Image (spheres, protein in one colour):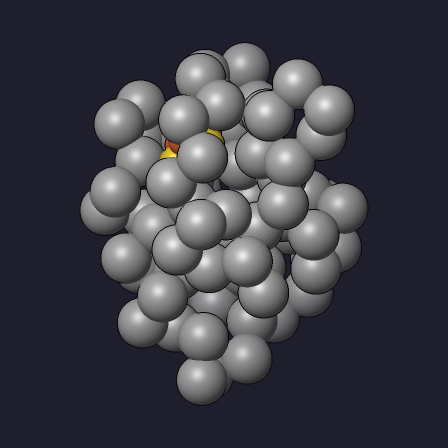
Length: 70
Ligand code: SF4
């Protein structure tokens, strides 16, 4: 599974990087991105992080967390 953040719709609520800081981080404005691959959706997420990535997906109020199954 890969992930990225739709930065055009992210409202910087902080949920995703609070829930899964191993995968998500934010810029100085609080807008999130996937820190594994600089939001390029090129790197597979470790299996051990799947649950928290899905939690982040479900807790994004603007549906800005994008997941892609391999
Ligand atoms: S949970 Fe959604 S709106 Fe909140 S910081 Fe993450 S991507 Fe942005």
